[in-house]
Length: 182
Image (cartoon, rainbow, N blue to C red; front, side):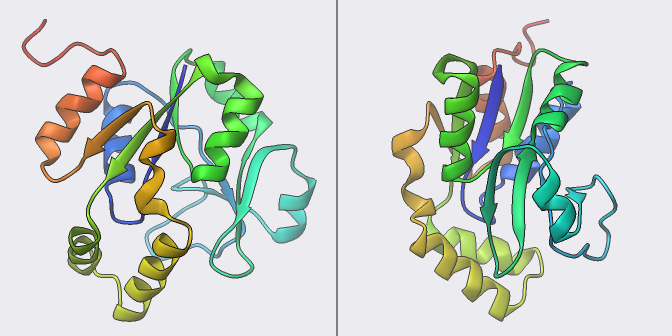
């Protein structure tokens, strides 16, 4: 089973993904042609590759984002993750969701839409230190791509205002025991 975390920048997808990893659910990491940022490394949070390397990789899905940068999920990465686990998660956009469902089948992909109202998203982006220009760019992207309206393709929705409650809901959605159930 693949759980896809879908949502706008700042909604908390990565935070909830890290929580899934703490619970033993590995991530299917994307490849990216964008340059590494401070604090990032190869494989964290992406497999960083050159544009020519990217074009030579057998991808399940790929999408442009932020100008010339591309992101995508390779078949080799999926094979690597499923060699160690029969359950995984991926962070994708809407186009990635459609590609995964087509490739793996509707029953093997469950979409968890991580939602936060726009005003809360902006506050969260400010709190994590994004510049005003970066925030404007991310808000424009969210509005242009209708990232705040992706509930219609989700199997589950988490309104991520309270992290502990969101984690509790996520455990339930992926079928893991709730704390106190042991």
